[in-house]
Figure 1 (tube, helix red, strand yellow):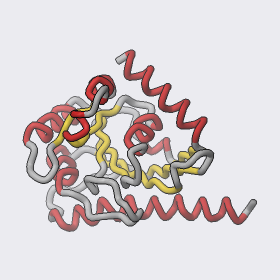
Figure 2 (tube, helix red, strand yellow; figure 1 turned 120 degrees about the vertical axis):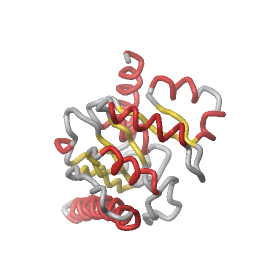
Figure 3 (cartoon, one colour; figure 1 turned 45 degrees about the vertical axis):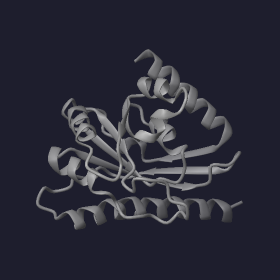
Figure 4 (cartoon, helix red, strand yellow; figure 1 turned 180 degrees about the vertical axis):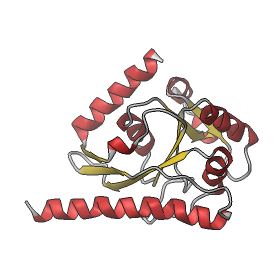
Length: 199
């Protein structure tokens, strides 16, 4: 766990120096208990930055292809990442996710399943819906807006946690997940627009 916090502060400091990071709604993250954090996926910077924003240790579900890169498996080991095989039901990843949530910990998921090339939000995958409905845990939405460029503003708007009711059908639940994120992205974009106007 010591290495986790060393990496946490390293990422946090480097990102704060390189980007203009703006975070709104951090108080919405529960201080204890199981939470599924969901966010839109714009860049490879999203996972480490979301993890570095939150004040509790988190777990990351990462695509299995990344585990073949040099050094990354070592990093993943210390930042609580675990692999998932996309494109079909990965029972090992699901089982591990349920274990994490049953321990009252946090998982960071990107419901779209991959980065968007256009910035437009895609449909949520069914995995996040299954985990949220199976465990009944809180879901914490985050909307990411802005650009990861030197001294450019990247904004994270954290919304209020919610639950996906077990009786809600999968399609409606997937839409609800992305609607929550989309609303927060728009809030962030509105903040950026007002900031530019006021200069």
